[in-house]
Length: 122
Image 1 (tube, rainbow, N blue to C red):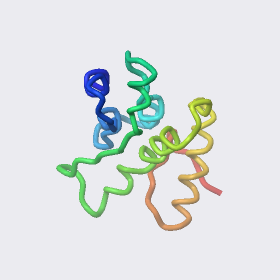
Image 2 (image 1 turned 30 degrees about the horizontal axis):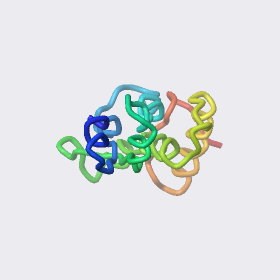
Image 3 (image 1 turned 180 degrees about the vertical axis):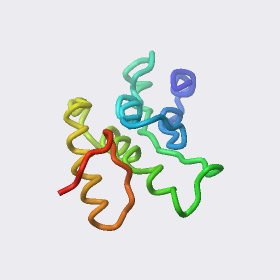
Image 4 (image 1 turned 120 degrees about the horizontal axis):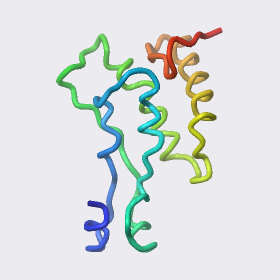
């Protein structure tokens, strides 16, 4: 899809791989982290038209009690992917950073779910 849009000279944002309501069990943030908005067949000029991406959340199965735990840590992985240099791409190293970020959020009262299984915060 990005090939077709950018081939027509139009700028684009990718959201299809960052639907936060497409959940799996522990560690599913990796599929969000491993998505690259420039990973499509196209020229360098076409790829320069990809402005980045956005995380989306459909709300059919969320409410005020579970929305934050559904969003975090998935959106944190998406943010790191979109806001970091292309060389920052090691999911194992990201796993440690997401553990730390989740603990910070939990300590601040934000109910982020554990990114890599049960885990623990000090």
